[in-house]
Image 1 (cartoon, rainbow, N blue to C red):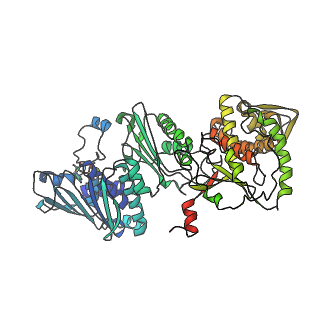
Image 2: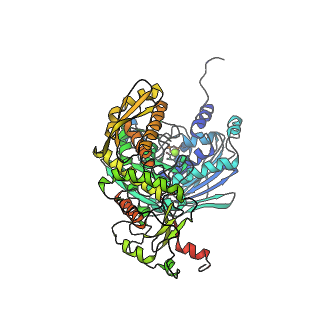
Image 3: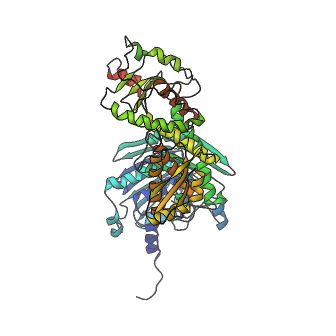
Length: 603
Ligand code: ADP
Ligand code: MG
C-alpha cells in the first residue's frame, strides 16, 4: 500500500481506542465534562454494561454555535496555549473525548445555556447531523448508544456486562469521592444503583461510598502541598488494594509513590494480603505536577515524588499512631462504671487456676529486661504443666477496683476481670467486654520499646560471656556482615567465625538467646532473598518485630492480676497499641448491647 494520510474518521477511531478503551473510561470522560461545566447534579443511566449511557447535568451548557465544535477533535474550551497546561483547573484539555466517543457510537448531545433555547446535535459513528431545536433544562444531556458497534475488534475486547458495570461503579465512586459537592443519582436498567446526595466534606462522602461507619481524618499542609486522608481503622481492611482511593488535583490516579507511602504508614498494622481502606486527597501547586502524561489521565508525574512520599507519611502515620479507634473503647470521660457483668455474679468466682507469683516483674521498669529474661524462662517451664488445667480464671471485683486507678490511658482504664484460656486478658469498659491478646499486646509493647531504643540509639545491651554461634550458609553470613553497623544500633554485635558461622557477641538484653538465634536466621534469609542493597531503615521494623515476637509473654502463660494491669498500663505508654507488629489485632471487643441482644434482653 502506498503511503496516505488517514481520513479524519479513521483517526478518530484510533484515538477512541486510547481515550475510551472501555465503557468506564467513557463514563469518566462524560462525568469530568459535566464537572468542568460546573454541574452540581448528575443523573446517570447505564445499560448493557455501559454500551448505552445517558448522562444529564445541570452545568452551564454549550451554546448553539459550539455544539458542532464540541464533537470535533482537538476542540476544547479549556485551554488555548501550551502554557495553560501548567495551570490547569479543569479535567479536560485534550479536546478528544467527545470526538472519540462520537466516532464509535450513536451519540446525541442536547444542551442549553442560560441565554438560549435548547439545541441538539447527533452523530452516527462519526457522521454528524445538523444542529436542531430540542427541549430541556439548562445543562447538558449526552446519550451514547451502541458503543463500539462499528469496531468489532473492540467489542470482542469487552468483558461481561456485569464486569464492565463493576468498572463503571468504581469509576463513579472515584468521581464522587473527589467531588463531595456534586450529587450523583445513578440507575442501571432503570433501577436505582447509587444515590449520593451533596455532602459538606470528603469524610461524609467517604461514609456514603465506602460503606464503613468508622472513619478517621487527618490533614496537613506542607509547603504548597495539602494532604487530606480519610482512613478506616486497621481492623477494617480490604483484601485488595482497590479500596485505596488516590486523588491528585481531584483526579483519580494510580500512583506508586502515594500507595507506597500509604502502605508504609500502615506498616505493622496489617497482615499479609490485607490492604487499608483510605482516601488520599492531594492538592498541590499545578506547577509541581504533570497531569498530561497519560491518554486517560490516570497517571500523573510529580516534580519531586519523594516530597509527596514524605508528605503522605507525615500526615498519615502520626494519625494512625494516635490509634483513635482505641479511644473509642472507653467512653470519652474515661470513667468505667456500670459493672453490670459483675453484679450478675453472686460471689466472686474463685481462681480456678493458681496464677504463679510474678509480682517482681515490673513492666514499667526500664531495667526490667535482665531479670525478666530469666523469669520468662522459668515461666515457660510452668506453662506446660499448666496446660490442660481449667482455663478460665476470674478475679473478684473487689480486687480489681483498686487496680483500676489509672485514668490516663485507654488501656489502663479498662477494668481487668481475669485471664481466659491462659491467653486473653478479660476486661471491660462501660460499653464492652474486651479481650486483650496477652502475647500480641506484649509483643507490641516490646516492639515499640525496641524501636524507641533503636531510634534513640540506646538499646540495653547484654554482652555474652560465651558468644552465641549460629551456623548459616556462607552467603547469608556475608549478607549479615554487610549490615554489621546497622545491627550494632539494634544492640546486636556480630562477626563471622569462618565462612559458615556467625557469632553474636552481644544482644539487646530483652531477648532470650533462643529468640536471638531465631531472629538472626530470619534476618539472614531476608537479606539473602532481597539482596544486600536493601535499605536497612525499611527492614528495621520487620527485624524489630521479629525480635519482639520471640521475646515476650506467650499464650498459655498464667498472669497475675497486677501483671495484666501493668501490661495495660504499659500499652498506654506506647502509641499504636492496638495491633501486634505482625498486624494481628491486640484486642477484640464485644459491645454489651450486642451481648444483650444475644441474651434477648433487647431487640
Ligand atoms: P475537553 O474536555 O478535553 O475539552 P471534550 O471532547 O471532552 O474535550 O469536550 C469538548 C468541549 O465540549 C469541552 O471543552 C466543553 O467546552 C464542551 N463540553 C463537553 N461536555 C460538556 C458538558 N457536559 N457541559 C458543557 N460543556 C461541555
Ligand atoms: Mg472532556
